[in-house]
Image (cartoon, rainbow, N blue to C red; front, side, top):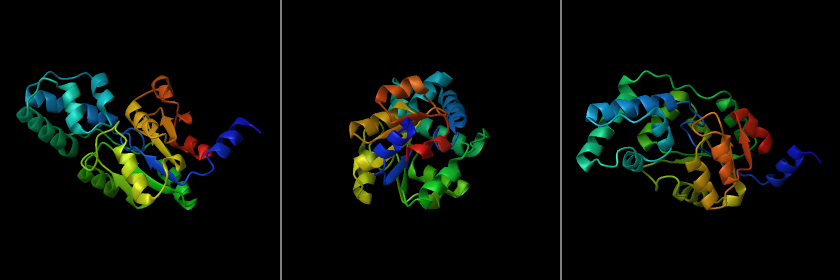
Length: 224
């Protein structure tokens, strides 16, 4: 039996695949970075580096602001939120395409009667807007957002999804591009697959013992 056969056999009971959104399904990293930098400038704060902003992608905004701007008060963080939201949704024209093969992968998994879900650092309003813009919303049976659960890397999103769908963590897979995604799955012993086309590379993702590390979403299918 070859390596791929062993991997497929060990993951044969997969009933649910949970996807992160930014950096996993959608290539929105550039817009997140430029919007956060613009928000900092408009709020009169030191503009963080691109690298620094990338490290908070996937977190809810409150903990993200705490890491990037630790000396700000609540009033400044409220301004940051407003500027970030407006810049991301209205003013920033940085393209946010779907990653290669994203819809085909979702379609293939759905046709195999595998449940699909999203666990994201986006707010509900933001994810619903992305579902509408991309037309992908119908593939997902449920989702959890930053304003509905504790922030990654706490596993609250995954626990809520698993409970709602009645699927044990062992029968699900978390697919994400950051250490935050891997940590929250690891915390509840949920199998995980790291994707390198987003924020973190293989050397970071490998620390969390994923079932596989893939370079694009179509490479996920042989591991299901």
